[in-house]
Amino acid sequence: MKRTKKQKTPAKKAVTKKSAIIAQCVVYAQSMGAHHAGFTVDHTGNSDHAGCQALGGEYIGSADQALRKLVGLSPAAGKPPLSRDELFAKAGELGIMANAGGSFQPRPDEQVFVRFFAAEVEQYLRAKGGAS
Image (cartoon, rainbow, N blue to C red):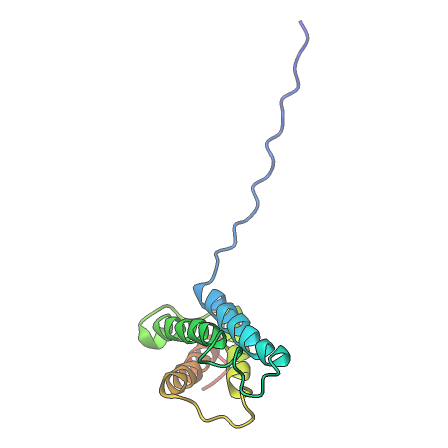
């Protein structure tokens, strides 16, 4: 009787847990990028198509919703501390937010984001022993 070879089961890949923080930072970045890209092709003079009152409003709305979700996911709102990658993502979002029009005059929801981000960086550095 011929012996059949036992098939090896493939090793399971380590499943990386998706970060809701990074996902919302990506939504914000992509939404703002799409909003700003519209102005490169809308030459109507009044941003008839790309402006917030037109197609651009959908992208600004998505960015605003992502920002609200990020505030709710913050450790300052009682959630777990952020990872290094999550802090990098939020730092990138802050860079996009601050570069929106040349002068940074944050709206109230953006002010909350900035205040929470500063606290998150402090918390991370204290946990790593980087600040006394």
